[in-house]
Image (tube, rainbow, N blue to C red; front, side, top):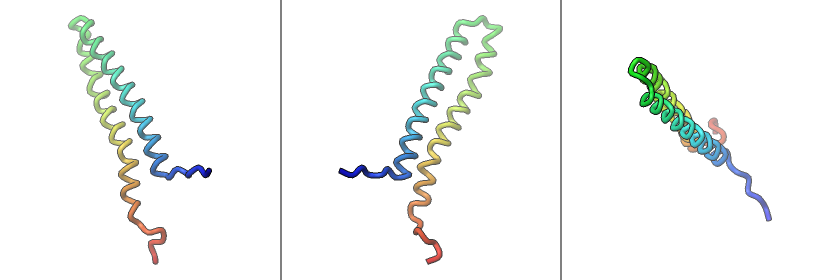
Length: 86
C-alpha cells in the first residue's frame, strides 16, 4: 500500500486553515476581553478600550488577507507550464 505524497497545495491549505483558526480564536478572545474591559471600566478609562479596538480589527483583517494569499498564489501558478520557454 503506497502513501500518496501530499501536494504543495494540500500542505499550504492545511497549514493556512490551522493558522486561520488559531488567529481567529485569539482575535475573538482578545476582542471579548476588550469588550468586557469597556463594559466594566469607568467612563474615564473607556477611551483606552475604544483606542485598542481599531488596531485589533485591522490586525484581524491583515491576518485573514495574508492567509488567503497562499491559495491565490497557487491558483496563479497552476496554469503555467513546467518549462515556460518551450
